[in-house]
Image 1 (spheres, rainbow, N blue to C red):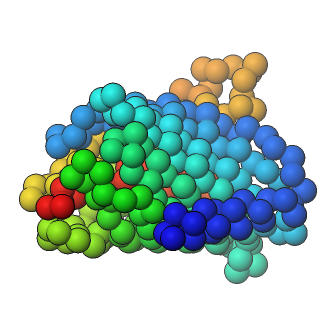
Image 2 (spheres, one colour; image 1 turned 30 degrees about the vertical axis):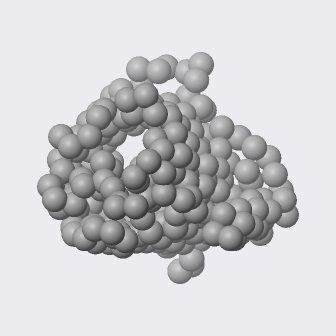
Length: 262
C-alpha cells in the first residue's frame, strides 16, 4: 500500500509539468566527490533541467546519480519555484523518488524551500516505501537547514541544520549538522561539515565529518571562454534571488536506514 500511495503522489507531482509551457533546457551539469570518515566515498553526477513556466512558476527537474562502493543510487526530482514578496524572495516545493541497489531501499521525499536576499531555508520530509531487506530497513525522517551567506565574503555560506529519523528497532537518529560551503569560482563548490550521526551509513552511535567537492558547468558557457568559470568571484551581498532559480535542491541524497532485529 505504501508503494502505491508513493507512486500516486509522484505521478501527481510530475503531472503538474504537463500544464506548463514545456520547453526542456539543460541549465547545468555537474559531478562531485563526497568523502566521509564513517562511509565509503561517493561519486555523484547531477543535472538541472528547466521545463519552462506555468504562470509565474518555474518548473524544473533535478536528477542525481551516485555510486558508492558497488552500489548505485538514483534520485529523481521535480520541483517548482516562484517569486514572492514582490519579487524579493523565491518560494518553492519539490518531490523526489530515491532508489539504491544497496539492499533495494526506496523512498519518497518532499520539500519546501524559501530563498531571500540574506538567507535561505529548506525543509524536507522522507518517507520510505520499501520493505526491510537483508536486515536493513529504510527510516522515515525530517530535516531542516538554513543557508547564511557571509556578508563580507558572500562566496562563503554557513549551513546550520537539524534532523530526525524515526528508528523502528533501534534508537532514533536525531541531532544537528553544520557545514561551510565555499564557491570561490563559478564552477566549483567546496563543502566541509559534520553532524551528530553517520546517517548515511545507518549509524547513530558516532558523529560524522564529511567533505564534498562539486564541479558545475553552466551550459550557456559552452563554446565561450571556459577559463572565466575558474576566475575568483567574491559574490554579491545581498544576494540576487534570481540566481537561486537554478540552485540545486538542498536535501539528503542518501537513504537513511538502520540494522533491524527481524
